[in-house]
Image (cartoon, rainbow over all chains, first blue to last red; front, top):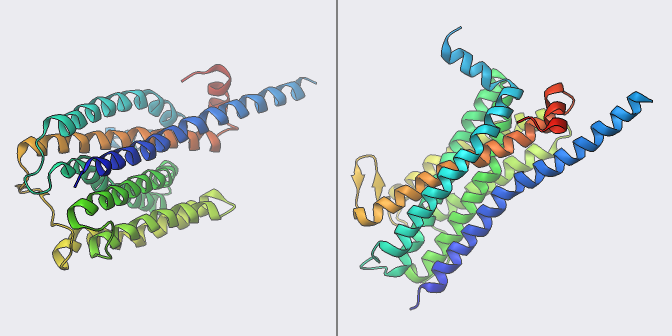
Length: 49
Length: 249
């Protein structure tokens, strides 16, 4: 029995799950920072008026 | 104030924790990648195949560290949850909830890689064996904690309920660990313990190096998620505004 597909399958699954798990908070932080920067700019403009 | 008490209080301070995590995360990733690459290179290319299982034993270098992490993270999540419930430490509450998705990821990888290892070794992808079933229950517990946390409109109430569930779920941890001793299972008993190992050093060392890399992965990922949560909850504070607008890290 050739074991290569099982080994490759296991490591590909691991790489996908762990990469997604690591990248998700980074993307969330980037989005949050962009949204907050927009919110702060808008509120600063409102305060100035 | 004693040094230990001061450190404990610093951890409770959101701006301090946010900045400290921001400084520490790149170093944790660096060590994680270096150790992971070293351990996997050793395990996949240098270590010998098993005399009985052949090449399929190479799945061990991913499966075993993931399995260790799956219940270690649960234990830590419950400890953070306990600190949050008893001492009302907000940082511990955030860290408990941030641990759940990471633990779920490790548990999922454990189940999938175990299944892929089981096919060439046992002749089947899955059996309702005590070890496999208790590990599946662990995945459901993680999903339950995450679901309960997001089910409440008020995040603090959700976090408290989820922390309570994580404490109740602790009962599953000794069941996972001792399942291979208590019941007659298809899964082999543990090969690495505090009193030594039955694995040859040529295979044991890469396994331990990958296991160490997994701990750094958890640390870096936990702090990344903690930072997001801290910023979300403190968006109206001056330090959060200063960081977002000025990029002060």
